[in-house]
Length: 310
Image (cartoon, rainbow, N blue to C red; front, side, top):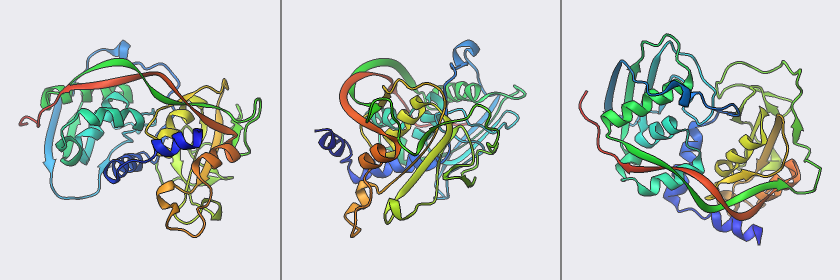
């Protein structure tokens, strides 16, 4: 029954699947976020100078620091610079939306929010703002230039509970992260290397080279020094699930993990389907997904308009 629920949850249309994977592509490195957000304590913030321009060049999306829902960040001296990004990416950055949350949000948005591309250049006089402060400034910019209005609410939705496949046991590719491990690379670059089968950079999610175990066109993704809550939230995007994933393992502390499998969309193109996502989750991490209903915090978009002039 679980396999059927996962399969049904993953039958996205071509457009929605491409959108989800394109968003994941922007998050080659996504950072863990276990600490309480400082945003509430900071209050409302604004950029001092900002420029918003539509981009029709079709160039590659770029930004001067990772725009994912985590804390991985490159300090920029107060400068925000991003180009050829759809508005949905800026909304996701501002409100720390995971892929599963994003899939709910985009159902209420006009198509241009996903298709039109924009360059945003902005500067703050705050000498060295944190990523949370940058998010707050982006919220103000979106409200001012795009007339974005949102509210937050909790809804009971179908979710997957992440649990141990066997009580008290984890799989061979899910290991506690040593408290004294000082080998983490500092750079958040997606080009960072691999150490012992795990990403070189700690605190973030990264794609790694695949092996025969993943099958043709397989995916190999992992992280070091992250929580099980982070792993659970990441699995919705990794496995292309329509349901959010909620950590119910009861495991505290930090972990390293690596997960290699053949995405379902590629299985029909190979002689051997390789390792499926549910199989890899069970065999490599010692985890499984339980279909259920649960409370999910959502950001609901009430209104949005095309940008005003600079």
